[in-house]
Amino acid sequence: MLEILTNGPLNTVQDLGRPGAMSIGASGGGVMDRQAFMHGNILCGNVCDAAGIEIAYFPFKVRFHAACLFAVTGARSPTILSGKILPDNWCHAASPGDILTLAAPDRGVRAYLCVSGGIDLPVLLGGRGTDIRSGFGGYLGRGLQKNDRLPLSESIVMPAVPRDGHGLSTSLSLPMGGTETLSLIPAAEYDAFTDHAHQLLADQEWSITPSANRVGYRLEGAQPLSTTRALNLLSHGLLPGTVQVPPSGQPIVQMADANSCGGYPKIGIVIEDDLDRLSQMSPGTSLRFSLISRPEALERLRARRSGFTTLKKQLGTARTHLLV
Image (cartoon, rainbow, N blue to C red; front, side, top):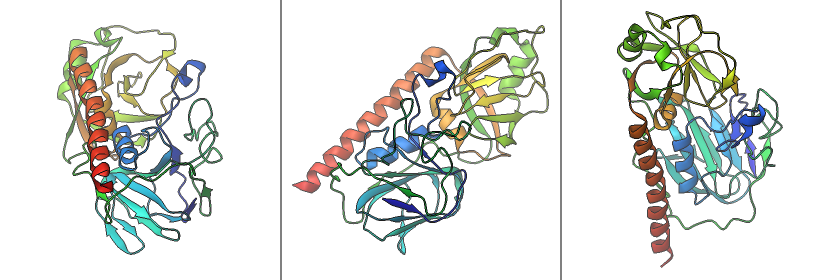
């Protein structure tokens, strides 16, 4: 069992989301930075979809009431286990009574805590994650509060790890600082925008406004994007990564809790890798867009999935050697 020792309305139990839920009007949800979260579960020997905690409000403190493995990934946050400083992106064994503390990050904005076996909460609409807007899923459908106790799976055998743990050398999702570049593919209404808008989309710097949350990131640029004519669209389905352009001409990027439908024209879709990176950017960050083709986007998606498979195999082999 995990005991939460700090209040954090933005800290929630999450997994990889609810596949198919958007077709019935519910948010797909899930973690914002999928790569960091999946790395954490792989380090713990879990399936990639095991429920963990997304931490966006710091400092975060939790007490372990049972022996387990845990991994902290995502934002670069000073991490201390009962007085011991841990490296970034690290998996370690916890003993009953150990207290884990995460301080405010100096790079990135969201950290992830995964535990061996995952957090054992009910599956609703195909997922264990929290949908705060609708008030269901996760732990009582809300952000975590002090004294909350989260049950852990009791049927998991912890994989072997070195005494001082093990980890990853880097987290590719984190922004590097300066102006970030995000790759996107053209969306359905791309051709309805003017040539000048196409140029602005790629050449102009956009700033993340304070209106940035799990639903969407509103961006602001010096010049707005405009269409060749007024569009009167019916509401249609949306997905995370969709870049909508409302009448203001300032883009909105749909994030993990994306609206299930909307009527604003869509100029592009941010690819999965870069959507993870965007989720780790704070308001005020400057970014640019780079248009790529669908085949290029698919190739990067295949490489991403292959990377997860390779990491699982490498860690599995390393654990086997530990047992010999």
